[in-house]
Length: 187
Image (cartoon, rainbow, N blue to C red; front, side):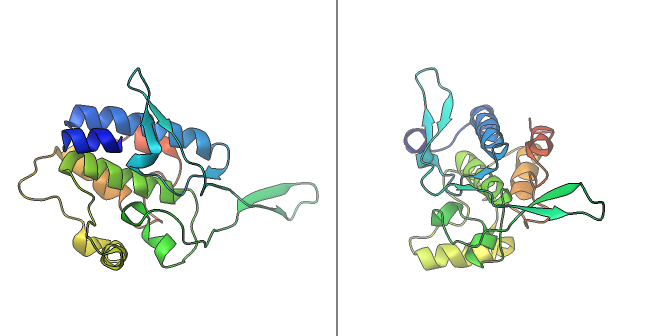
């Protein structure tokens, strides 16, 4: 995907919809296996000979740690997931909760999808800087820096999808699963 972004610079909304939809399905499938990729970026999205994507590089992936707790009733068990605190990923695509070590779960992968979607439509990542520390600062202060440039035209649905995926983790689109992203009007 990175090579295609370099070649095309900006995707049409139809192209961005196709690749983003395929990416959502790929991430949904790994999330169903209780896996967090933790390094979703264009370099790790391969395009096969038929034009479909393949998610690669699971070197930073994490299988969710599950905690089994006894409920009030004797035989029932309730399954929850521990938060992760490792600061991993690639600066442009990492969610703010990773940087500030709040603890995170699968929702960080959806932030990365939002960043990639923005990059497809605008031509560069939303928190771009040549300095990594500045990128991290912009991500931590994303409300101030997330702006679609005035010279770029995107549909209201595309802009809404960006703003709902690049958002606080507690209200981020996808935090309750991929179905809520797939139901977004952009798709």
